Each structure stands twice: as C-alpha cells, then as structure tokens.
Length: 385
Image 1 (cartoon, rainbow, N blue to C red):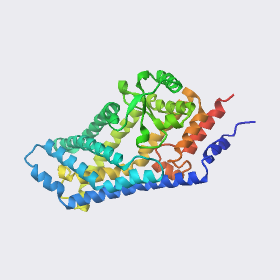
Image 2: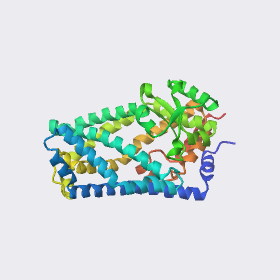
Image 3: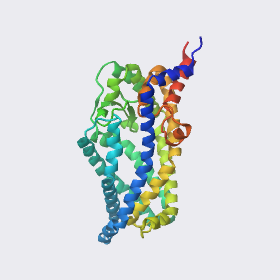
Image 4: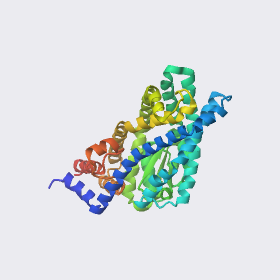
C-alpha cells in the first residue's frame, strides 16, 4: 500500500483541532493588520512632531554645530521621541496582544525594561547610521542613494557580526548546552557545518516568548547554535535535531549573505524613490525641510517605512526560498521528516497553517505550515523503503 502524502499531511494539521486552527487564523490575520496600523500610527506621530516644530527648534539650537553632530543628535532625538509617543501602540501590539493569545508570559515590568535597552541601542545605532546618510546627501548630492546602500551593507554586516557577541546577551542569558544526548546530537550536526562545538548554547527564550524556536546566528568565528529553553523542554530529541538541522541549513547555504544582498539592493531602491517622493510627502505632512536637512528626518523615515511596507511581498519571497532550502538541508542531514512535521505543527499556533494563497504571498516569511508538512511527507514517501 503506497504512502498517502496528502492524508499524512492532513492528519498532522487536523490534529490541532478546529478551535486551535481558528485561533491561529485569528492571531495571524490580526498580526497582518498590525503592520498597517503600525505604519499609520508612526505616520501620525511624524505629523505631530512636525506640527509641534520639535526638530526645527532642535536644529536651530544646534545650527553652529557640525553637520555630523546635528544629524546624529536630531536623528537620535526623533528615534527616541517617536518611540516614546508610539509606546501605547507598542504595548498593545507586542505585549498585551501576545499575552492575550498566550504567546508570552513576560511581566510588563520586564517588557518595559528590555524595551528601554532596545530603545537606547536603536537610538544610538540609528542615529549613527542616519548621520552617515545625511553626510552622503549633503556631500555627494545626486548619487547619495547609492552610497547609502553601501553604508547599509556595512551596517547590516557589522550587526550580524557583533549581534551574538554584544547585543543578544543584553536580552537573554546564553549558557553552554549541558552534556547529554541533545548536546551529543547537535555536536554532530555542528561538525558537519564546521561550527565549533563550544558554540552550542541554550538561552532563556521563555523570558520573552512561549514560541518553539532555535537559531544559528553570527558570521565566521562568531557563528553559534542557540536553542530556546522552550524548545529544549517541549520538544523530543528528534524534533530538536530536525529544527536545528533546519537552522544550520540557513548557515551552510549562506542565506545571511542573500539577506544582506537583498537589504542592500532594496535600500538603494528605497533611498532613490525617497529622493523622488520626499518633497510631495513633506508638503502633505506640513514639513518645510528639504531632504538634505536633518530636521526632515520624520519625512525621510515615513517614506522609507511606506516603501518597506510595499516591498514586503518581495522580501518575504526571498526569505521563503531560504526556508524551503533550509528544510531540505534538514531532511538530508538528519532525515527525520516526521519529527520536522510534528515540530512545524507546534509553530502553527502562531502561524495559520492554511492561509489564503494571497495572504501567504504578501505576508508570510515562511511557507505555510501545511506546505512545509506536505514537503516533509513527500520526502518521507521518496526516501522510505
């Protein structure tokens, strides 16, 4: 009797039950709406800051300072102020909503504490990056967008390198994965990927989220395997191996470079289009600044946010291709399609496993759980004697 791929796929998905499937669909659709509302709210905040002339007054006070200092101070100030003004929305979208769906148990005090650290980092690094953009606008004129794309490449690559070493430990505690069968299995996978065995960690991901996850981050010698304590406690050994094999697949396949390349190309396009649309958007928001003036940072970021939102189908398509390739690596490296399928079903709690094709095309960073489970079952059918 031949193996029925579709029946096996349906069995995995339907095992969630109709209530869980409906809840996953509601959570996923709501998450997509938060993208639009987030953009609208940030645009309203930009309009308010412009209306109150906050940045105009700040630039007037700094008019005798260097371009770099003015750009850094004004950009950082706007990033900080806009984050504070959108805090009610952030609390709803990133904490209350997650709490109401059972996706996190993080206390509000801890959420705010970690948010403060994130705000300081983004203010500092964002201010530095944007001061570089303004330098190119003022000094290089017409082709500033191309040079700013290069700056994006340097910035993203640097963050990829230093993130595991300096930034991620600010939010979670990383410790070596204890000896045992899980560590022995992952050391074997790490050896295949040429990742040092002393770079296998477990972290307290349950601090922020109840989601089932693992990752391989960093570049070169900073590369590491990190598994959330949620995964360690809620997954079988085979599921841990299958999921970690998937994450290692991203590393081995060099997907980080694909993402950096995509980010650079899109950033050049965004900056180019921002240059063309800036004056129109500035007039609509009541801003009198030119694109070369740091006091127009609110308009600049509204333009880029809008373009980023419109480009989601493109960026998500690139990411989905990488996810498919990483799944295939896991099948080849560990050959545990049933473990991958059962692990994927656990992620269906926060990803509608059966989305509308258009919904998946526009919003999904991963192929639907149903498609991925079917691919696992197809692998099983082809490689089971």
